[in-house]
Length: 206
Image 1 (cartoon, helix red, strand yellow):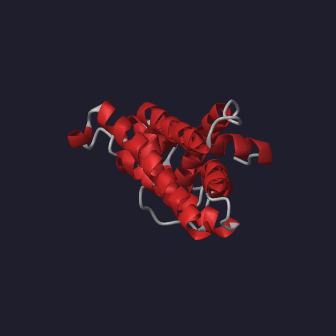
Image 2: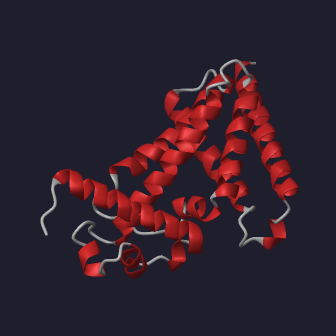
């Protein structure tokens, strides 16, 4: 069957939605081309007339998760223009934790090691860049004498560290299953890095 460009785009989105739903339900490790095809009531062969391979489908599903995450951050950030930079960082961290608790498997899938396809979903890298930009803004207010490249690199490091703390709340880590413990660690970390970077800035000015 021949599909129009719009029909193919709609079908590909539906495939990604099915994949995302399966990730949420059973975890990325248990999602396969066969399971996604079954969810579409199609064969795996048909699936590959739409996508190059399973990695590309997962990239598309992850792009949807990134969009939801960025939309949540953008909504939360709308009321944060006038608050101190450290509170902005805390708000970002809290939003990330809330999202991860609501979508633990989808959030974990964003950072799961997997080979990149030759043509990754175009929204994937854009989504990650947007996530980092939410951290760059408050960091730039703390590290006022630092160049943009360093701010960007620092924001990526901070985001990676925040994800590591948030991942402690995943159900696969029973030793850190107490919500309050993760909340405290996240809050302490944000305050520590903010004070540390601010201290480095001040020491350079002295």
